[in-house]
View 1 (cartoon, rainbow, N blue to C red):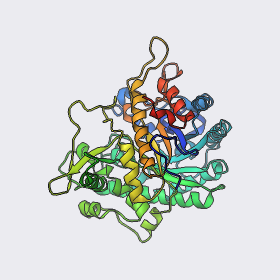
View 2: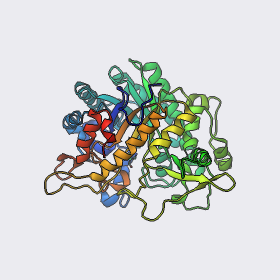
View 3: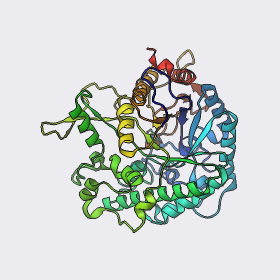
View 4: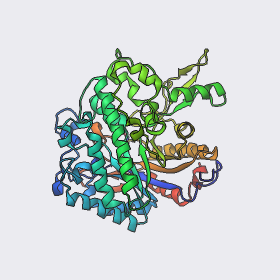
Length: 472
Ligand code: IFM
């Protein structure tokens, strides 16, 4: 465990100050150099699925402009960049023939990053599932775990002489739940509960098989994690031990699945324990298993052993937290945000303490070093008359969240890195280009990049190794 930092001191010297992005959201070049189709390419072609019919065809054109983007990252001084590899760019059919041109793009990108002194952290799957494999049953097909293992082997074989940090899946809650149950993300299906739980189980098997492949085939010692959604629960009154206990309990409780609720309101897919207990502890949570009844996935003999491969860090994407207090009977009671609660452009609540209680509770339960693999906000950002982007809200948001993170570290939580989502404004899935999450503004008509004020501020955070967070 790295040495704890005090609340007002700098971060550990080897702290991974990073930025993140994902292939489909920034690369564009949707049909270039032999790339295959992904379920997101198909979703974008369906009318009414994505805001104003936006597509990932061009996105930020990072595929052709990666040198400029890496130079921007170097200018900010980031130590690490979390990128994802597009599975159908590398293997257009999902399995079988490898597309050398696609693979070569990641070769060039990794080399460019290393030359700039930036450590590449590679996510193997950030939602752009190969369409050809969807046609073969997609994640519903148990073979998906082996398809993913084979794809992992191709990428690891090619990049692991230079890449040391790996993440398997990004936010399985989203591609399983939002993609196959709620139908608002690709592939846009509205399947039944049993099918979606099976999809989730196969995704976890894929994670485990992928870890096995990375661990055994990497050419340099790998550092492996994953990147689920983390939904922290914050105690209403942190000075009350009963509220802290209630928040901890609520954070890992499944809550009953209520089929009577409209799909959008049934948040059971977000439960931290359903996804992370099997991966780290080697079992599904009992309360979830009981509440899903006969819909639970079939467990074959070695499934849980395969899923629960040892990890080197618990990566987690944290944007917001819920709140709870101890009710009269001591049981967790949810506390709703009051009227006028601060919210981002996407209307997500601003809850900086999520970066205190989240890492703390996750480390307590999973006993792994923590990496914040995503955190950030969508803002109403535009280029002002003076040519700059004055996103004071992002600076304020970041300052609050990073201070909370540092307090968690001062209290002994071993946090190894922080990746801001995102380096660039990008394709925000079903919201298209309406939402702006970047430190860098992108004009989608000209593809011009303009660093926002927050990018310049983040540069100072990194340069001072967090010391300037103490300044108001
Ligand atoms: O843009 C997404 C990202 O792809 C996954 N995590 C949340 C981000 C903001 O919604």
